Image 1 (cartoon, rainbow, N blue to C red):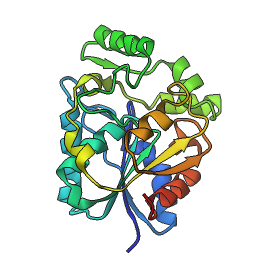
Image 2: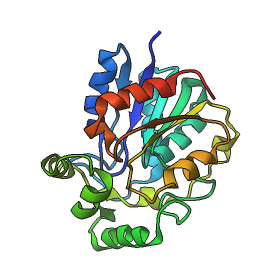
Image 3: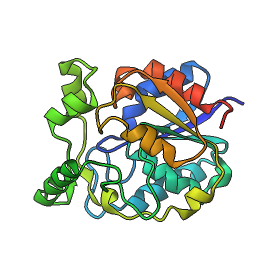
Image 4: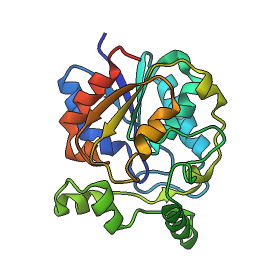
Length: 245
C-alpha cells in the first residue's frame, strides 16, 4: 500500500497551502489530505480558538475518514499540533514528519523564548492585542524577507494576500507533552537550508534535537517551500517517510 499523508499547515495558512504538494504526491502514486485548522482560512470565526481546538479537529478528521498508517506532517506551527495529535491516536500514526516545524518542550507554548526570539514574541503579541479578536498577521516586510525570500516579489505578495490572521491563543496555550515524549512513534525532520523565519539553528538542531532519535532530511529553500518548491517537498516527504530512525 502506498503512503498516506495528512499535511498540517502552519500559522496564517490553511489546507490550501498544500495544494501543489498534494498534486505532486498524487503524481507519485500517494494519497494526501490537508485539513484546515479551526480559526484558520478565510471567512471563519477566530475569536477564542485554542490549541486544543486545532488538535481535536485533526483527530476528528483522521477518525471520521478512518485513516490508518498515516504519515502525519506538520509544517512550522503545525509541528506543535502533530505532537498532541499523536498522543490521542498513536495506533493510527505510522510516522511523524516535522518540516521546519516547532517541536515544543513539555509544559511550554509556541511563543516561548525557548523557541522564538523575544522581540518577535513582543511584536506578535502587540499585533494581537491591537486586534478586535486577539489575532495577528505576519507583516509583509517580514514575510518577504524571512519567510519566502526565494519567490518573486509578485508571487510572494500574492501568497501573502491569501494569508489569514492567526488566533494568537493557539500560540500561548501551555502544552502538556509528557505522553508525546513517552511515545516511540518513528519521527523524521525535514530541514530547509535557506529558512530565515527563525534564527539559524532554531529548527535544526535545536528543535529537531528534542527527540533523541529521528531521521534527518535536508532540502534547499525558504520556510515556504510548499509554494516555491512543491516537487522537492514531495520528494523530501517520500524520503522522510521511508524506514529509518
